[in-house]
Image (cartoon, rainbow, N blue to C red; front, side, top):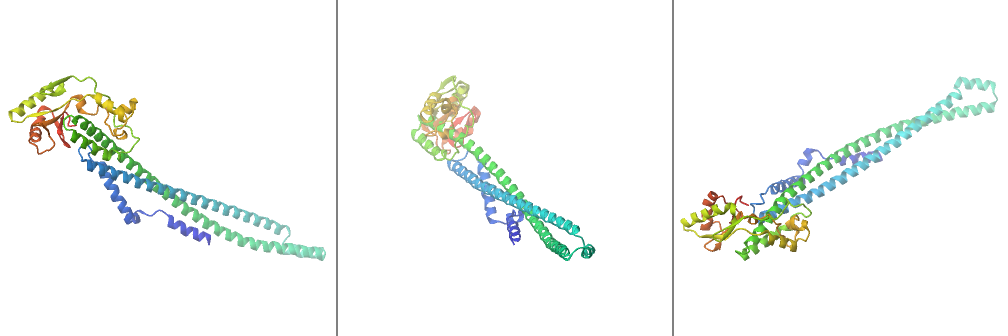
Length: 384
């Protein structure tokens, strides 16, 4: 009875085939969410809105949590299947040992029967021995025959038990193998999910640093806007997984050769092209101003205050792990003197519909400057 029950149990525990899994609504929902997370992980964080970045980080984090749960469940199922296999193999070994013992008993009885002789030897003994000896011999012979019949029945039953336990062990082995494959698949999926999360988190960290650095540079032009940018960045900084290395090393820009063009201080590398840009704008009736270079000294001081005093804290700790989040020195194009925050008619350009932005979008590339789409006022040599 116990064998039949165990076989039935193991048949239920065998891993579902691909067809049944494909028809499982829960599995289909998991696949949809995983695809959504995969799409979110491909987000261009540098050009996305704050809201899009937050949603992407949340979607990828949810996928990792769900995959961790599936992986843990699959690992537990594999361990349980392995334990069932161990017990099934142990039971089969026990039955095999019992069968060997029954066979050994059968051999001993056969020897005893031979030693006490068959019918002819019994008749001969009756003629040559007294009645008591003959009776004892007959008793031993009949006992041996009875034991032989009992052992024959036991041998047959034990063989049947052995066949059944071997089937149980085979079913357990099949289940254990399937569960092990399933656990390996879920673990591989977990690694992939974590890899997507790490990639998106790295991009979000870069975006965070650039936005924070830009806010610091904007403070002298528009303190209110700078505070708004900083506040928005903090809303998703806590969503970036902690204990990660920074995307790249960081050091202050060092001594930058500077020149001031109509009140805008920039690297001498772009001073001539800035002058030509402003002259062209004058010719079209537009008056631009703005802010260019920003020293790394202020950023180093902010990092010491918000991130810690060690070299790692100041130069390498991810911005999201500081309180409040603070960009590392050297991450801003302003620190290199290669970026400008433009004003038009004395006000920071905050709209893409602004005449100042429209003129720059048509002409700035001729002078080596490109815009960062999320910040209409910010133009640099590489668009960052």
